[in-house]
Image 1 (cartoon, rainbow, N blue to C red):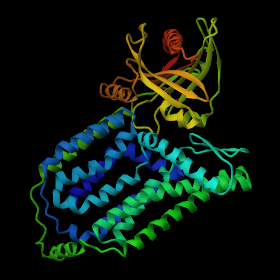
Image 2 (image 1 turned 45 degrees about the vertical axis):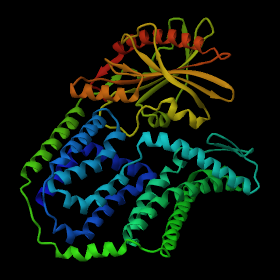
Image 3 (image 1 turned 120 degrees about the vertical axis):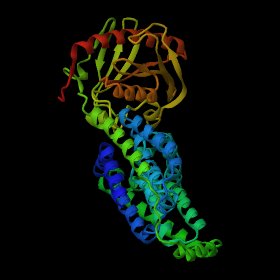
Image 4 (image 1 turned 30 degrees about the vertical axis):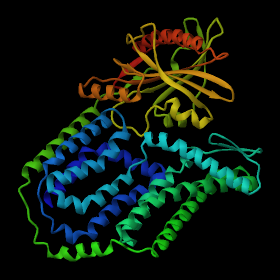
Length: 512
């Protein structure tokens, strides 16, 4: 018990910044407020099994060490490379493999459920929201539209936008269904643990939460459309909309219980075997303990190393810009720009500390839309990272037609480099998009490689900022090659302007 307590305290200290960010998300975002209940439930699972835990055979298992090292390295990458999608899901696995390393398989068999249950306390990773949220939004939009049609209301859908004629409803990320899916799965696990005894019934009860969540979210979208037609836009916003979401979640909860009630009529085919196992469990001898000092010291050392890297990197000073990013010049050689203001809420949601958006036009009449996202303290996991077009454009009705990389013909600040190239279409018009990420020494087209660059900067104690650059130009008559030439010229001019601007205005060590 003493070793377990010391390991838990060291683990919390090591991942304090990450856990603090998780708790902040619970408090700031109502969608994740259920997160406070998850560790309490996990603790209750342990309390329920406390008599069996007193009989475990402590036998350290060093086969867990490679897996523990993998998840610790992955967590370091997430912490130093600002990827909460990497570090947060790693936490339950780190706890699982520390348990296996220090206390053995017998302990893990009794603790895998409460430790694994902790995965539900983590906010949904952005990568999961991007790859699952988009399809779920479209599916919910289709189900909602069909329900609205069944009610006799004319409706048209374009992506995740539902057009009712007199108004439009947009199924945003918060209404994708993921906000229902994860708490409902967690609820399904707890329900199966307390109310189902047969393993196969437990498994199918948890799996049933997935279609229940998707279908009830579609029902919510449809109900919102029907109520909007009757009561106006107030039915799709504010307290009423939030209450509607809570009510639909309770409906999903009732569906889960109804499904469990139906399972009562099916046989518990494996219950006799489970019963025999349980009847033999009291015959176990008293707790046996093998010397696990080496495993305990190994786990403590690894946690201290990770904690040291995390805490020392957080001390690196911010690199701010005098006058802010909005002071970036609107005149770049032959290009004259017009700045478009962005609300603070959108800036924060985009994962940037500051942003800049302007439309530039040259003497040839060529137009380029420039967006910059800037972070002065890019290290340590952050709730959001820079949003790329593939994550935000589809929600606005744009369809991504192509995605590839583009090698610049002229060397920019970092020499030979490439950008991510995309072609997007909406209502017959096409745009060509280039974007890339850059620190003070490296540039890349990939968000994941950028995070690796940040982690390497941190390991080398090489302080840096992080910049996201996005260029967009319209495609005229399908001539994408001409659009590439326009963006190539602008990228060259922008690169020189940014280097001059940043060297002149950067301030190291200011929090202003």
